[in-house]
Amino acid sequence: MSEVQHPSAYPVSPFVNAFERDRDRVVVEMIGGRSWTGGQMVDAISQLAQALNAAGVSPGDRVGLLMGNAVEVLQLQQAIGYAGGCQVALHPLSSVEDHLFAIDDAGITALVYDPAKFEQRATELAARSEKLRAILALGAGGSGRDILALAATMPATPLPVRMVDPNVITGLSYSGGTTGKPKAIPSTPRVGGTMLQITLAEWEWPTEPRVLAVVPLSHAGGALFGPTLFKHGTMFVLPAFEPGAVLAAIEKYRINCTMLVPTMIYTLLDHPDFDKYDLSSLETIMYGASLMSPARLKEGIERLGKVFFQFYGQAEAPMTICTMRKSEHDPDNPQRLASCGRPVPFINVALLDDDNQPVPDGQPGEICVRGMLVMNGYLDRAEQTSEALSGGWLHTGDVAVKDPDGFLRIVDRKKDMIVTGGFNVFPSEVENVIATHSAVAQVSVFGIPDPKWGEAVCAAVVLRPGGAVDDGELIALVREHKGSIQAPKRVVFIDAIPQTAVGKPDKKALRARFAEPAEA
Image (cartoon, rainbow, N blue to C red; front, side, top):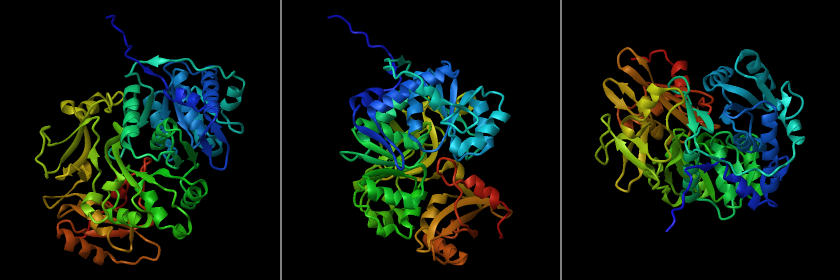
């Protein structure tokens, strides 16, 4: 029997074949704008790839993307690969200093931006960065070269089949930087292909997906597009999250699936017109990025039904370490609602101690992962890579406990744990108690310096519209349910919990804001 040789290579984009298959069907619709068929997407990708090369993007160049939600994000993600470049997502909510850091750290030489939203930022980046050679605007009216006009002059030639090494760097994303400077995390065809396979197999998609994208497509929102396309669905895109617009879009377009971070869900539930909209088409709300309050999750189930599907991951092992299916959300079991689900079967997941040894069931340990989903390492960060991948496992920094049914309940980030008077306090356990109060919309718990205790437990609380409660009542509530050690020494009431660029509560910002010692 002759031996068949299979090359160790991946297609630069499996999406193009899927676009061709649905050449005459609408695959993306920009709400308030135009719609795109699969054929139109392929043509746009071909033209943009040629335009990028004509504008000076060469193989190996790193191309920054700075834009809100737009169809062009999806097109450029594919076009940059065909042009031979490496895409670097610049989060639209990040500061100019963060953007400059990423440009310098990643070696970005070309920037593609939306002049309607980021003209001032692009101008400042061009003036302050020595590495940027090409400034490309998505349309006229900006200081950058109009990449869309240039693309329109190119023929829509068929895209060639292009295979790449499975570990070549095709993209870079940055960690949230909640504990220091952000780290660049390379994306490879191996990791991206594994994530796509897991999302197709493990996530609960409607039979004919009509997916609303409101989280950034350049980041987590982009994970929605592949499965939607491969399942012959349509993605409807909103330029940004605005609760009224989200509710209206679900009703008007009969949306049956969307992805939201917990803060967005809280905002929708608290919207004064929530009950006026017909949301009956919703089959699945995918949520993740941070822990969700069990009390608010129960409220969501009571008002929307069992439509909630949780995913857990991090940029180093994206999106799909664990999942909790809709049927597994038991509104009468707060411990289950506090879970991040069970590990997917495609990878190895273990709870390990500081010596990389498994902890006994029921004991807290760090969630550690190995398998095809895990990154090769941080860009140019050998020491941090060695630490993160110690012992052949990715150390997520999340501490969890496994229950008898195999569900993992994250008790907190390892670095967020508060040591007060020699005792360990996990903020999420305090947050879950405070969130049960009817006046509380959101809460974030963190440690602040204290001369007596070393650290003191501090709770930042956002009240619901019309809600009223004083700090003493919340402190007493925690003391009753968790004891005096976990009870906050200080409660502060604020208008909003600060968020990182990826939608997580920014505890570093809260610590800095309320760093003065608590009263003994």
